[in-house]
Length: 245
Ligand SMILES: [Zn+2]
Ligand SMILES: [Zn+2]
Ligand SMILES: [Zn+2]
Ligand SMILES: [Zn+2]
Ligand SMILES: [Zn+2]
Image (cartoon, rainbow, N blue to C red):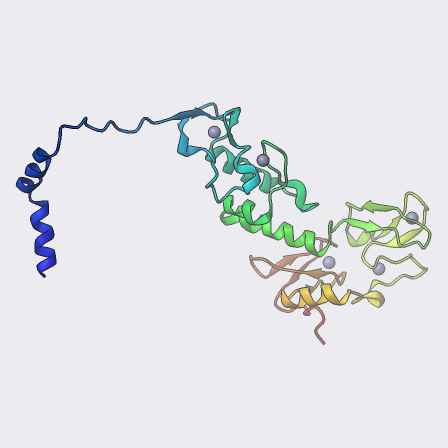
């Protein structure tokens, strides 16, 4: 109680005036001059705190300098816009696709996601997951023993699961990734997933597409699943769990 009374006494305007009068005459401090820089992207003049600096935690340390140098500053909002636009176009082919717009260095996932929210973030994470599970869902190595060719098979419907290698002309099954023998039946070749991938898929409660048998994961959305591999639709709830008995 005594303390709070003393504090109030100090704030008394009369006391404050006395204290000021007792002090030697000083110049009134001038407000700090606002430094403005020009953004190289949006061409707007903005105060210095609108630009990345050494303390910008949403930018990789190596890029805090390159986005905030005198030779070419890029404002925070341009950095964020650019990052979310790039992430929206991110196809999941390689994590190197999202790079600094000044120096071209790859931005690690943890920095990219700080500029994303909502659907953008969901989509980006889904793409990263897709990359982690398989670099490209449409990519296939030729299963022929002596062939080292690989190819992107875009028309991945069940009707054209038989694909012929452009290098060795050996036919293989797109789904099973084995050489196509006479009377090939995909159902006989399911479930050959390596243990590490299988573990990941089980943790994610992945389901098997009832049509083609490929593992499908769901990030969000309704139970009506469209299989990206064969194009079939199936019900998530009733589909078999990957690795489940
Ligand atoms: Zn800008
Ligand atoms: Zn950079
Ligand atoms: Zn081949
Ligand atoms: Zn097959
Ligand atoms: Zn399918």
